[in-house]
Amino acid sequence: MIPSQRHLFDIPPDVAYLNCAYMSPLMHEVLAAGQAGLARKARPWTIGGGDFFDPPEEARALFAGLVGGDAEGVAIVPAASYGIATAAANLPLKPGQRILVAADQFPSNRHAWAALARRRGAELLAVDGPDLTEAFLAAIDERCAIVACAQCRWTDGARVDLERLAPAVRAAGAALVLDLTQSAGAMPVDLGRIDPDFAVAATYKWLLGPYSLGFLHVAARHRDGRPLEEGWMNRAGSEDFARLVRPSEFYRPGARRFDMGEVANFALLPAAIAAMRRIREWGVDAIAATLAARNAQIAARAAGLGLAALPEARRAGHFLGLRLPGPARADLARALAGEGVHVSVRGDMLRVTPHLWVEAGDVDRFIAALARLV
Ligand SMILES: Cc1ncc(COP(=O)(O)O)c(C=O)c1O
Image (cartoon, rainbow, N blue to C red; front, side, top):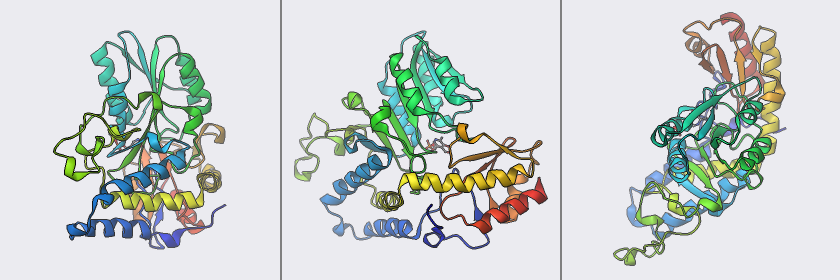
């Protein structure tokens, strides 16, 4: 178990912030790295060629290390939606074929598939059931061309067992696209073994990083694909600024062709790097175990108030969706916030997502507020 890391964050004692699934707070050191990076642009003569190319490489390696992936296969993107759009632009889909998503899947991993299905005369099918893994497995057949899902659902934490799903997707000859935004950094995953075609994660939740940044892991078989943009940095030889007047027709190696324009963001990348270094130091397995234990305590206490969580076997340990005993009062989230408790309300679900800054007093504050308001 990792002890409280509250001292690394800027969270006042009377704030119980149980909403990492909405947006994680930046650690002091992450904020400092981002501010220092932004400040460098005030003195552009201090920004050299290496600043364009070195931080992206460190960020690729750190992300790959956290998800069991290959640093050469990591592209840097501005959002999960960008990664999903890249996947949609590079996967084959014929009329009559199917794309599978989960019911209530996050829109950034749904809209692109709905549009692609419309354009190609294919079908988008949303699956659901008490066990989301089983629901996907049951829906995979010879019509299935793409399965696009998350490792855990953003509304209730329902887990998809990727170790079981991936072989079934492969056996059907379909592609697997993962949105790891609600899991990367807090839930172990081994992309080397699962071998998804594309896997994306935005950094501003469980990677404890800034907003407007993410990583896209691209399988080796797609690294000769078509990027969404044709920026100067993605081309071979772009490190040599003097030769940019005669750009190469070839891309840089690995997944770098899929990098977003202006990939060397001098403020956001250093912040993301600082956060991922800290996550690497804690270890994703230890983070997951610590958050699972914390959430099991919260689930047990909430059960006493009539709020039910999915059984542990079917949900992600770091992610708690609590079903309210009746319809939520319209102002529940605001009323809880008024008591210094920050969670998300989604329909009749309370989404409770603590991280390492949360202490026993925060949980007490949350349970006491729930008892008064629900
Ligand atoms: C599952 C999931 N994916 C992605 C995102 C963010 O998407 P984007 O980076 O496209 O804004 C969220 C935000 O809540 C999410 O819950």
